[in-house]
Length: 155
Image (cartoon, rainbow, N blue to C red; front, side):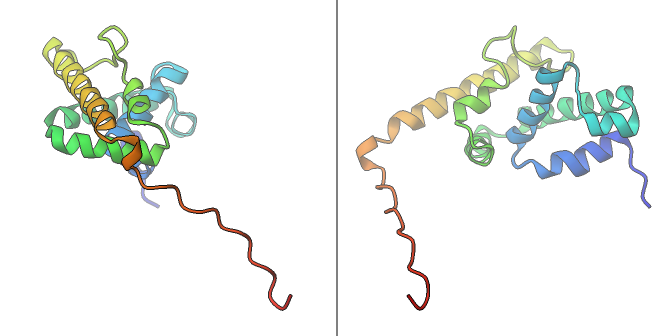
């Protein structure tokens, strides 16, 4: 039996199942918003609330750092992929991160990192809005025809 630390468990088992960088960040942000500071029932039960909270905060910090190092072109594609997999719009996914500096998740301890993160969010939001406006509704392919049930075999 391999023993894992709380952060190895959280990142290796929980976050690895969430598709996309922004999808992972959304998951962590929702954990923090829904139940206070980094609530995760299973992690708390196994490792205690202190270790679970620390693991989630460390993962959160690492994910934000990864976002800040990722080119915008890659983040734009990740946004589409993460939103589709989470079955939300790109705007709903971005809204999880806060739309103003006072609603944004804490970003390390540096004001410059906070401003950089907010800039990335605003840019992704603008790109998503531009892409939504760039696709005329009459150009979208028609929905697939409804499938009628097949008659039973031998009927």
